[in-house]
Amino acid sequence: MITLYVNINRGFEEKPIDEFGQIGRDTVVWMDVLDPTDEEIEWLKSTVGFIMPSKEVLGDIEISSKYIETEDSISANMSFVIQRKEEIIVEPVFFFIKKKIIVSLRYMDIPLLKFFLSRANSQKMYFQFAESVFGEILNLEVDRIGDRLEILGRRIRNLRKEIFMEQSEEIIKDIAYYDELNITLRETINEKIRILTHFIKSPKVNAKTKRELKIVMDDLHTLLDYTSFYMEKIDSIQNSLLGLITIRQNEAVKVFTVIATIFLPATLIASIFGMNFKYMPELSWKYGYPYSLFLMAGVTLALLYWVRKKGWL
Image (cartoon, rainbow, N blue to C red):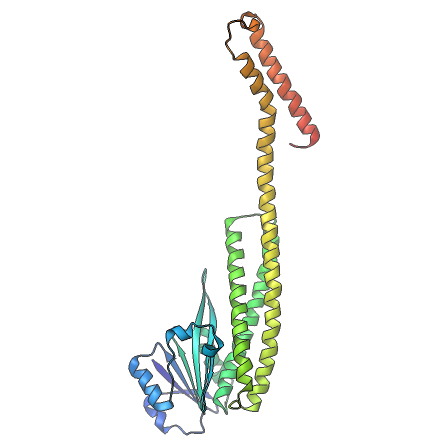
């Protein structure tokens, strides 16, 4: 599906694709393409010279697939993080910029693009260049990553307090989720820095957008430092949790070990008096049974007193 947006003085106005030929050449046009058909791809190719990437290229990590610049166009393959309840999705969006036209190709809903459209219309944004649209989308994405890292920082701080109160399976799942989220955000930040490094150097990008994107680049480097800091904090929490679990296990093993040690002499005595040899003098002794019970109880109580005095129980 192709949705055509024309940038006017009050934001973006949606138009049917049949009216594309009537739009002025000096007007910025945004074509948002969702899960396109072969006919739609052919229309984009014949109308604006769009070069359709393969799905393998969309998932590639090589910079040669992330950023492509030709004589009259710029293509950038950028990933967006989508958070769900227990799932973190990384979805690529392919941007194609040529003169006053920008095409965004995707295969699932990207909340940021809807937010960009809503914000552009509410603030009546006017874009003189197509690359400025790309720059504003990227700027919003960086703000969104910053918000997510701020929330992640608060949750990590709360998690550090929680692990000292309980060491449950849910806490372990939370730690794994936050660790995955932080690493995913870090990877997308690195990706955007690599793309921007080439984008800013392009002679096809206007000076104003370059200045704005250099600020975005500085923000990305700052966010990258935050992900490193949070990575260390999560590792620290994992080590603390592992230490607490080890202490609990050691306490349990210690209790069982002490109990086994206390009852070991009594077991030994019972084993000795339980041997039925023919020439054991105690077998016919009148007080043999109470004597053995008294001996087992006395040794056990003495060991119990000694263990308590040592502070082992």
